[in-house]
Amino acid sequence: MPMIQKQFKLSGYRFKPTWLGTLILIICVPLFIKLGLWQHNKAELKKEIQSTYTTGSSADALSLPSQLGKLDSWQYKKIKITGSYDTQYQILLDNQVENDRAGFHVLTPLKIEGRNEYILINRGWIAGGVMHHDIPTIDTPSEAVEIVGQVWMPSKKIFTLESDAEKAIWNKVWQHMDMTRYQKNVPITVLPMVIKLDAKSNAGGFVRNWQIPASRIATNMGYAYQWFGFAFASILIYLFTGFKKITHES
Image (tube, rainbow, N blue to C red; front, side, top):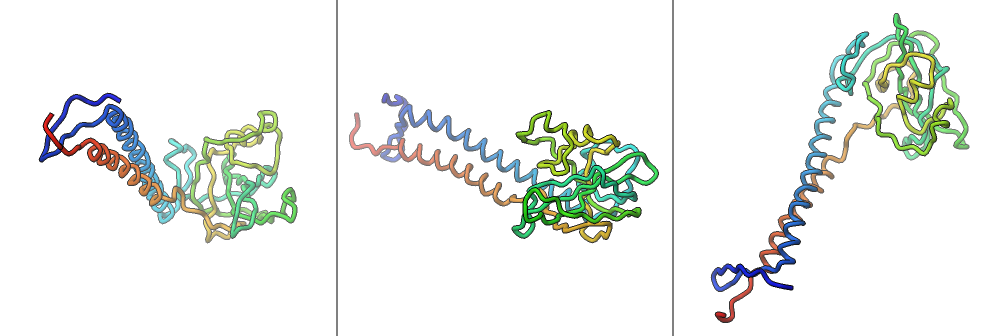
């Protein structure tokens, strides 16, 4: 391997790095810094999400206007609304775990009082049957109820092996909350959001140990410091291997 011709002398040592070492440094340091910044930005985003969630959960409940405006602005907002459950288009989200036990989340459309619109209410977790395909019995209030809960905007990033034909068939058990699919499959007008029923509400709820979103902030920060450490270590190794003690003047 050819050597870099440029040399620097310092207190009896000559800095004489190799082309290979320089090339590795040029590639690795920017890459490690980029990965570190990526993890750091993920941590900052999660902090922002948690702050929004905490603010929404502790704030007074808002009324839901007829015009929602920008949908993303409603994420984690606490709202209060009155209406009646309609179990005809109720769905169960599969693979929900509570205390190491498999079950479902119950999502029931609520007809908003005084409006010809519905909104999905996540009423919480119920245990599955002995056989996975058994549908549990679900009790639902028949009278009008007042709903208090936080808005959750269903993710649009959904991975599924189901075909378009399978998605078009109505099924009570769903693997993911696909709002676009749901709106296409029901003959009612459904707002594009879900309300997670407040844990203190008595409006027909089940187990509601809602998880705080965007956790593992410390993990992301740890990864960020790790990548920054790799970048710093790469520089130190480059310098350490590049300096050679002068034994005689050439």
